[in-house]
Length: 137
Image 1 (spheres, one colour):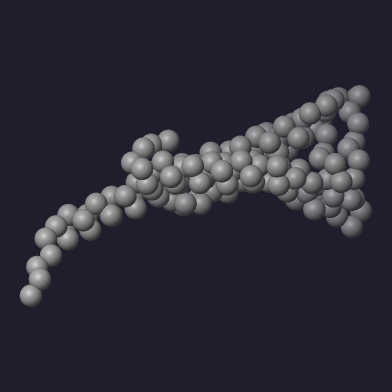
Image 2 (cartoon, one colour; image 1 turned 120 degrees about the vertical axis):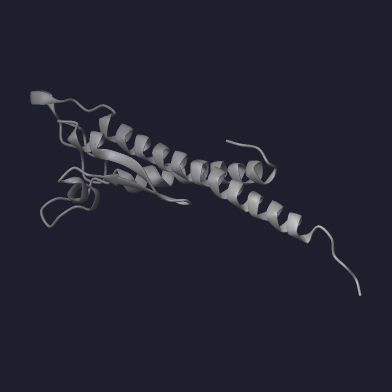
C-alpha cells in the first residue's frame, strides 16, 4: 500500500492560495467599480455649466450637471469579498438614467460601464495572475 506524505501541507498551501487570490481579486473588483463611478461622474460634469447659463443635455446624452448633486452622489461600495456596487443616490438618478413618461433617458451609468468594461476585465485578470503567482496588488 502506498503512503502519501505532505498532503496536509499541500492542502493548507492550496487554501492559502485561494484566500490570497480572493483578497487580491476583490481589491481589483473594487478598483474597477471605483473607476466606473469616476467615469460616470466625469461624463456628467464635462462641459456642464451651472447657474443661469445651464443648458439641459440632449436625450441620449449624459445629463449636464447644474447643482452637482447627481455626480457627487455616485459611489462605489464593496458588497462582498468578490463583489462591488456602483450607485447614484440623487433622488432623480434613475429618472435621468432610464427616462420617464415625460422625459427621454439621459444615460450616464450604462455608457460608463461599457467604456470601463475592457479595462476592468483586464485589471481583474491581471490581479488573478498576480495573486496565483504570490504577488500583491
